Image (cartoon, rainbow, N blue to C red; front, side, top):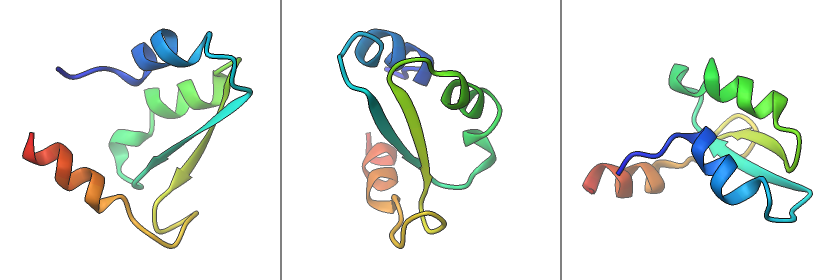
Amino acid sequence: MFVKLADVFVRYLKNCGYKDCILMTDGGSENMGKVKELITTAPHPAIQHLIAQVDVDFSNSMVEHTIKKN
């Protein structure tokens, strides 16, 4: 089942009590637009966006591999 990031925010993060959270993605165009809009407008918890191999030295390739297998 494919779940939109906005749905995850509303269902799990909005009322979780966390002050902030981190979303790590690659630098692909699919992570701009609506994703960037949600990240910049999320009221609580705030979402810090880290881009693999830009903001951190490692990549998310292992996560992508797992997702592609399913």
